[in-house]
Length: 377
View 1 (cartoon, rainbow, N blue to C red):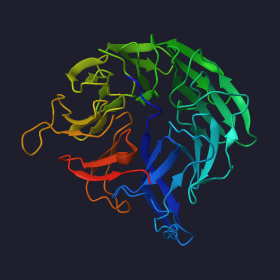
View 2 (view 1 turned 30 degrees about the horizontal axis):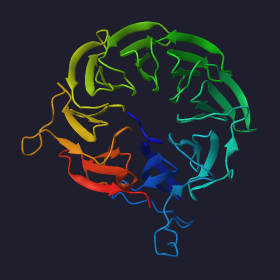
View 3 (view 1 turned 30 degrees about the vertical axis):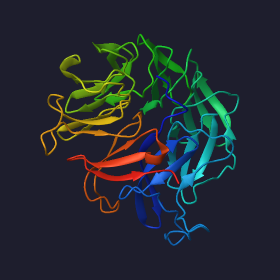
View 4 (view 1 turned 90 degrees about the horizontal axis):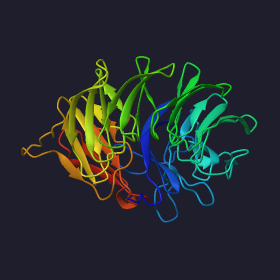
């Protein structure tokens, strides 16, 4: 089914002011990147040099952290942290922004064009010193040299790279829609190996105890050695888009017809359980928290499952703990725990939808009570 013009990406991010660190939910969607207060779902305030909220706008609205860049912006992926004061973001048109976290403005004005490249980008950049790695939606993984705004190197692929690479001990591991997984030297871009994984892949590999795990559109989940050897595979009912999650030697993944899987990584990815949970696609990585697995679906629902067998968690009235939201859920689900500084008083589950009027929705983890919603200002 059509996805429309984009999908939101969400994560947790920290900013600093003086000696204080503040936690936010960061969202990239449509024409902007915003920070949201996890305590109440309000836009995070822009702070002055004294770490106090800046004076309100002329109409009385609070000044909030809201980056929009210039021109026809469209963001599919989150920025990455360059340092405590700077984020690196790339929009769909492959313009690179260096965003000042104190002002929510670009230090490089209208952004920098990626040298020698045209096309689109939907993957989050990866920062490694002065080299910033970008997966390009048309083809190739490229390294941008921030110091002199040059293209350092490119690893050629036959189709698009839709996910950020994984960096481990000087090697980049990444997937492509060309049915291959790649390993390349992070400094030079020299190809180390290329492995046929039988179908397109659109997620970042997961590294656990020296083994890479990745799902593909071949309806398979693979365990792959760092040397590029297939160690085990498991056949799913449909495509696997999101990165798997691993907890206590169990791998959790979901597919695009609504199934959730639990596999034993100590026994060649043998099945522990498989449950048909949703009526439409589960695209994102399942959240595993204590005795629960939580997933969001394109059927506009959030599901709480028991980790040991995948059955629905029961609410206080003995009914399956499921919550309906106003639009499809395509992005990862966040779990936010209380800290001394974030103002959250109980563990939250936060989801993003395609509806800007209810872009973020927070529920209590325990019973799914609605805590707050966030809408674009």
